[in-house]
Image (cartoon, rainbow over all chains, first blue to last red; front, side, top):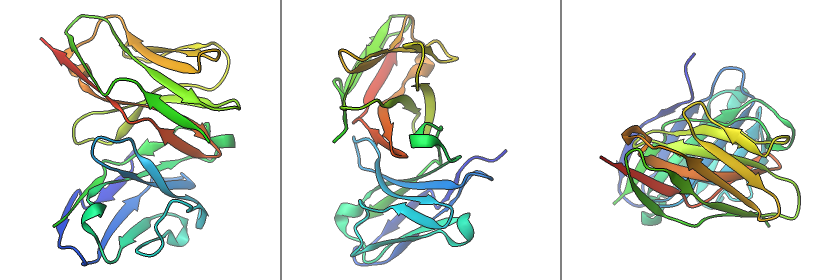
Length: 116
Length: 111
């Protein structure tokens, strides 16, 4: 069975340009997460979906970041416009629903964004 | 607020030596605890987890971690490391459906 698939793996853009990342979770996983991982840091949650609903987006910078999960399967994370400080790895993860987060989250390989 | 502290950013060891990666968490309520491993250019993979029950949990590749409530710690240990264990290790707590990660410990195993 395929794991969490993310694309692209790498992206280099100029500042002020838009960029989008795509994630296909494991089949049957209702919960989808986007995490931001800065160099030398642990991942930090940007947004969590339960099916189509964003249930936790408190850490998403809504002035430039947006996300969607149409039909409760694939998800797209967008940045517009990108800033130099957005250079990082963007990780997508998925899991089965569980009480208080005790289920295992499966991570994709991430998209490494470089803003120049 | 919950937080996770990994006390060592880098741990260099020789092959076949024992290793301990330290993790402390702060929480006033019960938590679920995890260790994830990230190999170069890969996503995170679950290594082991503590949800309840026995305070000592083991992984299939020889790692173990012990939940110590009084010291709010969840240190990761392996009695004999291999070159292939070289990776970044992240300790995490889960609450309300969200994983909160530490800053990571880079384990470097040298021949």
